[in-house]
Amino acid sequence: VNLILEDIADGPIEACLDAGVPLLVFFWGDPTPYVGPAHARGVKVAIQVGSVEEARAAASAGVDFVIAQGVEAGGHVRGTTALSVLLPAVVDAVTPIPVLASGGVADGRGLVAALSLGAQGVSMGTRFVASEEAFVPRLYKERIVSGIAEDTIYVEDLFNVGWEKAPHRVLRNAIVREWEAAGRPPIGQRPGEGTTVGSRTRAGQTMEIPKYASLTPTPEYTSDLEYLPFWAGQTCSLIRDIKPAGQIVRDIVREADEVINRLARTRTTPQPA
Image (cartoon, rainbow, N blue to C red; front, side):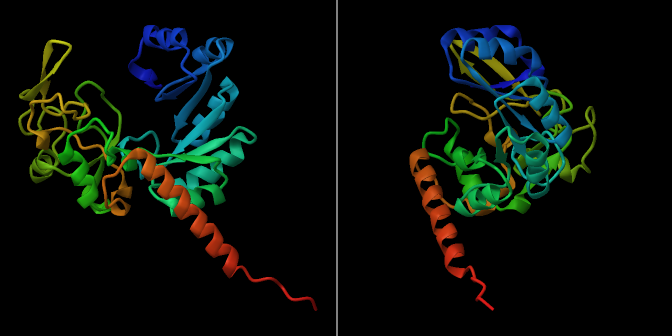
Protein backbone atom coordinates (compact mmCIF):
# COMPACT_ATOMS: atom_id res chain seq x y z
CA VAL A 1 0.00 0.00 0.00
CA ASN A 2 1.29 3.46 -0.93
CA LEU A 3 0.97 6.12 1.77
CA ILE A 4 1.85 9.83 1.71
CA LEU A 5 3.20 10.64 5.14
CA GLU A 6 2.73 14.40 5.05
CA ASP A 7 -1.03 14.29 5.29
CA ILE A 8 -1.87 10.90 6.74
CA ALA A 9 -2.96 10.07 10.27
CA ASP A 10 -1.94 6.96 12.16
CA GLY A 11 -5.33 5.34 11.55
CA PRO A 12 -4.79 4.24 7.94
CA ILE A 13 -1.34 2.89 8.78
CA GLU A 14 -2.75 0.86 11.67
CA ALA A 15 -5.51 -0.40 9.38
CA CYS A 16 -2.89 -1.60 6.90
CA LEU A 17 -0.96 -3.38 9.65
CA ASP A 18 -4.14 -4.97 10.98
CA ALA A 19 -5.00 -6.16 7.47
CA GLY A 20 -1.61 -7.80 7.13
CA VAL A 21 -0.54 -6.01 3.97
CA PRO A 22 2.94 -7.28 3.03
CA LEU A 23 4.49 -3.92 2.16
CA LEU A 24 4.07 -0.24 3.04
CA VAL A 25 5.59 2.24 0.59
CA PHE A 26 5.90 5.71 2.08
CA PHE A 27 6.47 9.04 0.35
CA TRP A 28 7.04 12.63 1.41
CA GLY A 29 7.93 12.31 5.06
CA ASP A 30 9.85 10.54 7.79
CA PRO A 31 9.15 6.79 8.02
CA THR A 32 11.03 6.35 11.30
CA PRO A 33 7.98 6.10 13.63
CA TYR A 34 6.42 3.37 11.52
CA VAL A 35 9.32 1.05 10.67
CA GLY A 36 9.48 -0.69 14.05
CA PRO A 37 5.73 -1.35 14.39
CA ALA A 38 5.59 -2.59 10.79
CA HIS A 39 8.51 -4.96 11.21
CA ALA A 40 7.00 -6.25 14.46
CA ARG A 41 3.96 -7.31 12.41
CA GLY A 42 6.05 -8.85 9.63
CA VAL A 43 5.39 -5.98 7.21
CA LYS A 44 8.19 -4.64 5.05
CA VAL A 45 8.70 -0.89 4.64
CA ALA A 46 10.03 1.17 1.73
CA ILE A 47 10.17 4.88 1.02
CA GLN A 48 10.51 6.87 -2.19
CA VAL A 49 13.18 9.57 -1.95
CA GLY A 50 14.45 12.42 -4.08
CA SER A 51 17.90 13.02 -2.59
CA VAL A 52 20.90 11.21 -1.16
CA GLU A 53 20.33 12.88 2.19
CA GLU A 54 16.78 11.55 2.35
CA ALA A 55 17.98 8.09 1.34
CA ARG A 56 20.57 8.03 4.12
CA ALA A 57 17.94 9.05 6.65
CA ALA A 58 15.67 6.26 5.41
CA ALA A 59 18.47 3.73 5.72
CA SER A 60 19.12 4.87 9.28
CA ALA A 61 15.42 4.43 10.01
CA GLY A 62 15.70 0.77 9.02
CA VAL A 63 13.62 0.61 5.84
CA ASP A 64 13.84 -2.58 3.79
CA PHE A 65 14.49 -0.81 0.50
CA VAL A 66 14.59 2.65 -1.04
CA ILE A 67 13.02 3.96 -4.25
CA ALA A 68 15.11 6.69 -5.89
CA GLN A 69 12.81 9.06 -7.80
CA GLY A 70 14.31 11.15 -10.59
CA VAL A 71 12.94 14.55 -11.52
CA GLU A 72 11.68 13.03 -14.79
CA ALA A 73 8.87 11.37 -12.84
CA GLY A 74 5.22 12.29 -13.12
CA GLY A 75 2.95 13.33 -10.30
CA HIS A 76 4.50 14.74 -7.16
CA VAL A 77 8.27 14.91 -7.38
CA ARG A 78 10.42 14.89 -4.27
CA GLY A 79 13.76 16.09 -5.67
CA THR A 80 15.35 17.97 -8.54
CA THR A 81 18.02 15.54 -9.75
CA ALA A 82 17.86 13.38 -12.88
CA LEU A 83 17.60 9.65 -12.26
CA SER A 84 20.89 8.90 -14.05
CA VAL A 85 22.72 10.94 -11.40
CA LEU A 86 20.52 10.32 -8.36
CA LEU A 87 20.28 6.55 -8.68
CA PRO A 88 23.98 5.60 -8.49
CA ALA A 89 24.53 8.19 -5.77
CA VAL A 90 21.73 6.68 -3.68
CA VAL A 91 23.01 3.16 -4.32
CA ASP A 92 26.47 4.18 -3.11
CA ALA A 93 24.98 5.87 -0.05
CA VAL A 94 22.77 3.04 1.23
CA THR A 95 24.40 -0.21 0.09
CA PRO A 96 23.63 -3.00 0.99
CA ILE A 97 20.00 -1.83 1.20
CA PRO A 98 18.29 -2.54 -2.16
CA VAL A 99 17.35 0.44 -4.31
CA LEU A 100 14.65 0.64 -6.99
CA ALA A 101 14.63 3.26 -9.76
CA SER A 102 11.66 5.52 -10.44
CA GLY A 103 11.15 8.31 -12.96
CA GLY A 104 12.24 7.98 -16.56
CA VAL A 105 11.67 4.23 -16.90
CA ALA A 106 8.96 2.82 -19.18
CA ASP A 107 10.51 0.00 -21.19
CA GLY A 108 13.15 -2.72 -21.17
CA ARG A 109 15.92 -0.33 -22.12
CA GLY A 110 15.17 1.76 -19.05
CA LEU A 111 15.16 -1.34 -16.87
CA VAL A 112 18.59 -2.38 -18.13
CA ALA A 113 19.91 1.15 -17.66
CA ALA A 114 18.63 1.18 -14.08
CA LEU A 115 20.20 -2.19 -13.35
CA SER A 116 23.51 -1.01 -14.78
CA LEU A 117 23.42 1.95 -12.37
CA GLY A 118 23.01 -0.35 -9.40
CA ALA A 119 19.24 -0.68 -8.99
CA GLN A 120 17.67 -3.98 -8.01
CA GLY A 121 14.54 -3.18 -10.01
CA VAL A 122 12.24 -0.37 -11.10
CA SER A 123 9.05 1.31 -9.92
CA MET A 124 6.92 2.75 -12.72
CA GLY A 125 3.94 5.07 -12.58
CA THR A 126 3.21 6.72 -15.93
CA ARG A 127 3.58 3.45 -17.85
CA PHE A 128 0.90 1.81 -15.69
CA VAL A 129 -1.47 4.77 -15.92
CA ALA A 130 -1.62 3.83 -19.61
CA SER A 131 -2.82 0.32 -18.76
CA GLU A 132 -6.24 -1.24 -19.21
CA GLU A 133 -6.66 -1.68 -15.46
CA ALA A 134 -5.80 1.87 -14.37
CA PHE A 135 -8.86 3.50 -12.76
CA VAL A 136 -8.61 6.76 -14.68
CA PRO A 137 -10.58 8.11 -17.66
CA ARG A 138 -9.67 6.87 -21.13
CA LEU A 139 -8.86 10.43 -22.21
CA TYR A 140 -6.11 10.66 -19.60
CA LYS A 141 -4.54 7.43 -20.86
CA GLU A 142 -4.78 8.58 -24.47
CA ARG A 143 -3.03 11.85 -23.64
CA ILE A 144 -0.09 9.90 -22.26
CA VAL A 145 0.07 7.74 -25.37
CA SER A 146 -0.05 10.74 -27.70
CA GLY A 147 2.27 12.89 -25.59
CA ILE A 148 6.00 13.51 -25.55
CA ALA A 149 8.33 14.64 -22.79
CA GLU A 150 8.07 18.25 -23.91
CA ASP A 151 4.31 18.13 -23.32
CA THR A 152 4.95 17.77 -19.60
CA ILE A 153 5.69 20.63 -17.24
CA TYR A 154 7.36 20.61 -13.83
CA VAL A 155 5.73 23.17 -11.55
CA GLU A 156 6.29 24.16 -7.96
CA ASP A 157 2.73 24.73 -6.81
CA LEU A 158 0.10 24.81 -9.57
CA PHE A 159 -2.25 22.04 -8.42
CA ASN A 160 -1.90 23.03 -4.79
CA VAL A 161 -5.45 22.87 -3.41
CA GLY A 162 -5.33 20.03 -0.92
CA TRP A 163 -1.55 19.68 -0.99
CA GLU A 164 0.56 22.81 -0.90
CA LYS A 165 4.28 23.23 -1.53
CA ALA A 166 4.61 19.89 -3.30
CA PRO A 167 6.26 20.21 -6.76
CA HIS A 168 4.76 18.06 -9.48
CA ARG A 169 4.92 17.15 -13.17
CA VAL A 170 1.80 17.07 -15.34
CA LEU A 171 0.82 16.97 -18.98
CA ARG A 172 -0.23 20.29 -20.42
CA ASN A 173 -4.01 20.49 -20.80
CA ALA A 174 -6.49 23.37 -20.89
CA ILE A 175 -5.96 24.49 -17.30
CA VAL A 176 -2.17 24.47 -17.62
CA ARG A 177 -2.22 26.34 -20.93
CA GLU A 178 -4.64 28.89 -19.47
CA TRP A 179 -2.28 29.51 -16.56
CA GLU A 180 0.74 29.78 -18.86
CA ALA A 181 -1.09 32.20 -21.17
CA ALA A 182 -1.80 34.40 -18.14
CA GLY A 183 1.94 34.62 -17.46
CA ARG A 184 2.16 31.87 -14.83
CA PRO A 185 0.75 34.04 -12.03
CA PRO A 186 1.28 33.02 -8.39
CA ILE A 187 -1.29 31.51 -6.06
CA GLY A 188 -4.09 33.97 -5.46
CA GLN A 189 -3.81 35.53 -8.91
CA ARG A 190 -4.43 32.52 -11.16
CA PRO A 191 -7.32 32.46 -13.66
CA GLY A 192 -10.53 31.23 -12.03
CA GLU A 193 -9.04 31.04 -8.55
CA GLY A 194 -11.66 29.90 -6.04
CA THR A 195 -14.12 28.50 -8.58
CA THR A 196 -15.20 24.87 -8.97
CA VAL A 197 -14.62 22.72 -12.03
CA GLY A 198 -17.01 19.86 -11.30
CA SER A 199 -17.79 17.24 -8.68
CA ARG A 200 -17.09 13.70 -7.59
CA THR A 201 -19.55 11.25 -6.06
CA ARG A 202 -18.16 8.46 -3.92
CA ALA A 203 -20.00 6.24 -1.43
CA GLY A 204 -23.10 8.37 -1.90
CA GLN A 205 -21.29 11.58 -1.02
CA THR A 206 -20.80 14.35 -3.59
CA MET A 207 -17.79 16.64 -3.31
CA GLU A 208 -17.27 19.84 -5.28
CA ILE A 209 -13.89 20.02 -7.00
CA PRO A 210 -12.10 23.38 -6.75
CA LYS A 211 -9.94 24.63 -9.58
CA TYR A 212 -6.27 23.69 -9.11
CA ALA A 213 -7.17 20.72 -6.89
CA SER A 214 -4.42 18.18 -6.27
CA LEU A 215 -6.55 15.19 -7.23
CA THR A 216 -6.18 12.28 -9.62
CA PRO A 217 -8.94 12.10 -12.25
CA THR A 218 -11.05 8.96 -11.95
CA PRO A 219 -14.26 7.87 -13.71
CA GLU A 220 -16.21 9.12 -10.67
CA TYR A 221 -15.69 12.73 -11.70
CA THR A 222 -18.36 14.73 -13.51
CA SER A 223 -15.78 17.43 -14.14
CA ASP A 224 -14.26 18.77 -17.33
CA LEU A 225 -11.14 16.62 -17.37
CA GLU A 226 -9.23 19.44 -19.02
CA TYR A 227 -9.33 21.23 -15.67
CA LEU A 228 -7.91 18.38 -13.59
CA PRO A 229 -4.23 17.41 -13.37
CA PHE A 230 -2.97 14.76 -15.76
CA TRP A 231 -0.03 13.53 -13.70
CA ALA A 232 2.58 12.15 -16.11
CA GLY A 233 6.33 11.81 -16.42
CA GLN A 234 8.66 12.42 -19.32
CA THR A 235 8.39 8.74 -20.28
CA CYS A 236 5.22 9.56 -22.19
CA SER A 237 7.69 9.92 -25.09
CA LEU A 238 8.18 6.14 -24.86
CA ILE A 239 4.59 4.99 -24.31
CA ARG A 240 2.58 4.32 -27.46
CA ASP A 241 -0.17 1.95 -26.42
CA ILE A 242 -2.67 1.08 -23.72
CA LYS A 243 -2.51 -2.57 -22.75
CA PRO A 244 -3.01 -4.88 -19.76
CA ALA A 245 -0.60 -4.39 -16.87
CA GLY A 246 0.58 -7.98 -17.07
CA GLN A 247 1.47 -7.54 -20.72
CA ILE A 248 3.39 -4.37 -19.87
CA VAL A 249 5.52 -6.31 -17.38
CA ARG A 250 6.11 -9.22 -19.76
CA ASP A 251 7.07 -6.89 -22.60
CA ILE A 252 9.52 -4.96 -20.44
CA VAL A 253 11.21 -8.16 -19.26
CA ARG A 254 11.42 -9.42 -22.84
CA GLU A 255 12.85 -6.11 -24.06
CA ALA A 256 15.39 -6.11 -21.25
CA ASP A 257 16.50 -9.63 -22.15
CA GLU A 258 16.91 -8.56 -25.77
CA VAL A 259 19.02 -5.56 -24.78
CA ILE A 260 21.23 -7.62 -22.47
CA ASN A 261 21.73 -10.29 -25.14
CA ARG A 262 22.57 -7.66 -27.75
CA LEU A 263 25.12 -6.08 -25.45
CA ALA A 264 26.64 -9.49 -24.78
CA ARG A 265 27.02 -10.12 -28.52
CA THR A 266 28.69 -6.77 -29.13
CA ARG A 267 31.13 -7.12 -26.25
CA THR A 268 34.68 -7.37 -27.50
CA THR A 269 36.97 -9.89 -25.87
CA PRO A 270 40.65 -8.86 -25.67
CA GLN A 271 42.90 -11.19 -27.61
CA PRO A 272 45.87 -12.75 -25.84
CA ALA A 273 49.16 -10.95 -26.50
